Length: 251
Image (cartoon, rainbow, N blue to C red; front, top):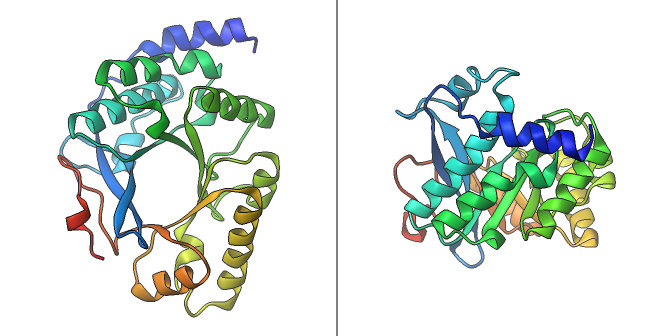
């Protein structure tokens, strides 16, 4: 698709809003060494806290683009309403982006309207979504960096491509999925795989986050491997209607 056609698509369909309500919950990513919240991930929920799955089940191929755009705007306006002053992570769907710059228009507008700094926004793309066009994803990452956004590879180790995807694209952040984190304290293969990911991230100058942590033993093992940023139920669950503070974290 040409850039012109992409601009038309994002200027039309992406401006529409989904015909069902949703909101955002926020889960902290903690810096264990500093004993401070590093940032928050915005997670889609129903208006009464219904699960993400219940919301996503209502998204169709026809509303995918509008939903992706609406999630970005909702995350920014809700974060600004709560006075979020740390990093904000927003999930996005690479296959829902036709032209990177055109499809950022509403995001940039929302950030301006709510006074939210662009350099605090990280866009996360997940390994669980099959990347149809790798050159297109590379263009998305480049465009986002031009605007001052960071990018993160979410669910690392649980999706389609693993290290092969990382060889083609170097985001700013890698988030190691729960599938590798679970029981890492007693699982030698998981320890070896994560150690390799930590070394790779260091060589590429990338930040690494362990997500889905639920046990102290997992955290202790991962810290000994050089990881200091964590996200998971052990520290805080996603919250609706307010932001957890540093004092709320189960340090």
